[in-house]
Length: 298
Image: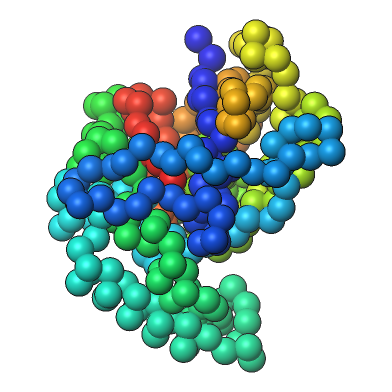
């Protein structure tokens, strides 16, 4: 069986909803802070000259990490998907302080302090009320690794695992070596370079990710979406096919690079660590295939 992931166009819509408030908003906070309303379906995008729904544009999605909305929920929130008004006021205050710390004279990865426009995003975006990106399981926590996966994790090599020594390049993973963050990690926010540029042409959609990835995806008929590469052929970003389901573009991705980070053969490894900073801890630096299914929602 080849690794497989179906990624609906809600990821594309979520990029817009995370970036700009006036467009397709994420779900509104519910009266019950432990419930998540259905994703709104009343938004209708424009169309391209050839009649496809138009997703083109550059969509920054750095606001969640800037506002410290982690992939995995801090345990203090329990089963709550949403902040209380008091907690949101604190998030807004912190965002305002971050904006004030911004300086045009100190711009760069190692010296940049502060943000631009974060407070306005927290004020206007429904997503700023979320306690985490992960919504299922209800507690917002990744399921525990299986014993085999835990063993692979402890034996694995990566610059993101503390107190490891490195003797040669094969001790580093694909992210350390600026090859790829892999899939699906590349689709999630990270410390920096959180931008997604989408371009379209008849029969294709291109997702150009700011960190080390460009995905050129053919759009096919629904009945042809399973015509992927042979199972023995794998790639860091997998093999993707897309089809239209109403206003939704469904992207079916399979043939994702399998393996682990224990081998000293870099070409034989799986893709790089998953979502280190968004999960909030070094234990997130492996993505063995032994995890049970999870769901995140924008």
